[in-house]
Image (cartoon, rainbow, N blue to C red; front, side):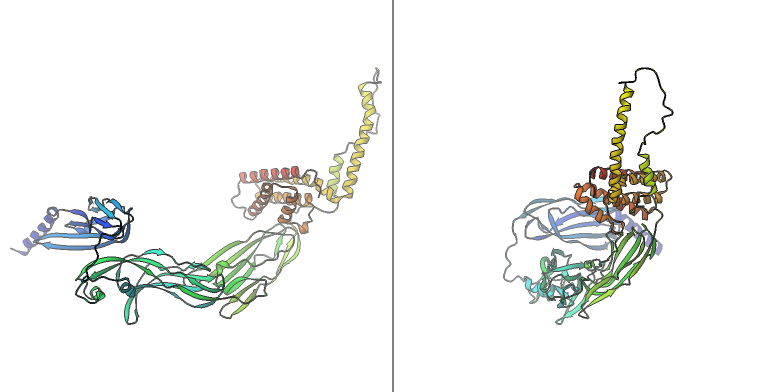
Length: 607
């Protein structure tokens, strides 16, 4: 027979074997009756001609069991008389959660375009254990023997450190045994520490180390940076794992681990669960020396500081930003904001805080505090030098960092709210329009016939001078009070000037001039509060206005609304992009309602 026909015959035989060999997918267990304290094996096996066409293995739902290990896959293939066959198995080690009868549902696997399913299996779980005691000649493995070849170590980089200094603890797994996937049974407790988990590697890889002449496979399980928050003797509780260990037992060997390592093909294989526990870490924490520096707030490490003011000359009511960045290594998360002394007449908000922390080995990075500051009055001001004090464990001393002194020139803004100690001409015109003067010229008086005495016009003529005299008397008294009490005058006109500003804001809203609109709204609110509450401009701040208002206004919702309205107005003023007409209308209505509510609550109150 020529080679060509021989190759053709083999090809036809292999092709036909795929159709002749049946494809099966079965499930089996090591024992259908087990104890609740025992683990057992369940195996799913595919048998067929082409195991390379398998895909998408789906195990059953092990809701009533704990999966100790799996799936552990293995494959085999053979050709007998030209017939190709193979097996692929999926092995699990599981343990029941409780006693009772349970059904392990079907597993499935795809073979080409077909889905194969195994049969369900019924398991009876008895309370306790069903295994008889081993005979004297059986070789068993004690926990002490396993512990000599499988353990966890907690390793620290120092045993004595200062309060707030970083302590790095690394948990390593040492093994000379064949183990399956471990499960965490108890995490360590970091009582007395601020803990930062260090970034783990993407894959756990084993290296080899020699301890007391024995070679171990070693893997890093966990790393953490600990910062002690108190002094004294502190400890970290152990890290515990449940680890399935595969062992082989033989009666004729004096050392079972020799069988395991040197002759794995002999003896019966079994899996036991071992509870591995790390050592307890104990360290001594030294109290920091007394510090007479008020700027020290607990920072420990090695740091640098930069402080930048984005502009030194601005217009009144325009924002400036003070950015403080603290960089270095240490307990960055625990660093508090440096104290910033803002001059009177400036408005400031809580800083925006941003952390950029690197947790690869030593905790390092930066922490940024960004202050938004708004000058309300014109003039030349200074922000004193900022101080940041930290304790350096390497130098065993306190270090203080200082910034420059920031000088700010605030120019008068075009939209400045006009207040003062004198009455303007515009105010006099307002008062004149409120007065009806006595008519002095009677040339246009006409006479008519009839009895005028005791008529309605007679009584009007008699009573009118009296009424006019009373009006003039009370008006004069009011004007005298206003003239003698400037604060009373400002209190009375506060709502009037605010309404004028709101009318101007309404015009700007119709023209969709958002920047000018929010300027008018802000000036209307601040001007109203300054005059109504009799607060000098140089001493005015939102917090002080809230403090004074809280004496006369008991409803916290109104005070919160005032604070939110002013803050929202300021934020939109300094980031006006994307402002729509409906936002302007909402702010206008919100401000108008707020001023009317405050006017109603403060009716009759003169500060």
